[in-house]
Image (cartoon, rainbow, N blue to C red; front, side, top):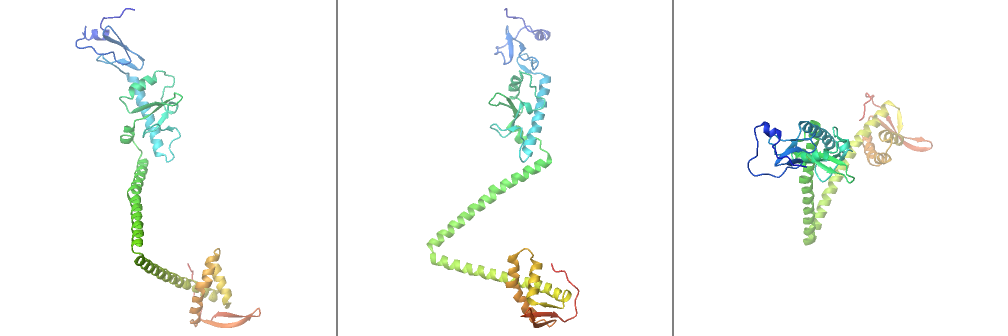
Length: 314
């Protein structure tokens, strides 16, 4: 058909009857004829700009994009702040997750021109557009928006700070400590090979020091346990029986203190109880005798001093 060469009505209304200057190519998504931009494709989403040289998004389409962006912000925050992530998120080569169009609120599923709109919009917005292998539309926020402008809830922000701090400590402290230990081990190995006799002497010296310290610690613990076991035995002698066979008293105290640990009862019997016997031999509040029990001689202890109030042994 015939090409219209008259200026568009919108230009005539402004008193412009012809265009001056060098001509430009017809913009994308535009329909041009006679040297003028006449209309835009997908006119329910695009309209001719006020300068009559481009196609821009309509006000309603801009509002739709704002709603899509808001929905993507909510989905992205939920994904990042959830320790397990969102089941709706799909990562496709970027920091920010992508989401299938069916999971995005306000996405116009029946609008076949929406891909054209989004392809145009992502150039000037914070959106990112992609497709699945089967051609399904995926939409997400740009990496720049997620890293610098995404509004995180306070509790999520605290969680992210803690995770970043832990990551920093791991990278800066733990890793450096590991390499320090590697260097120490390497130094020790090199020194040992270079000075074997001196290294052996140093090893023996350190081993002796460690053995002495462990022995002192063990004796200190036995003394503390002996006091505890002795006090339990004294309470039983005063408040539960006039006399006790020593072996029976020993076994009863051991089972009372450690009813479920055979190892601890053996420790009480072999290591601690001999010290209790040594203390009792010098304690005149207890009478020591030997009697026949079931035809066998048994040591027997009897409390002969005034009784003291029963104490709770921790």
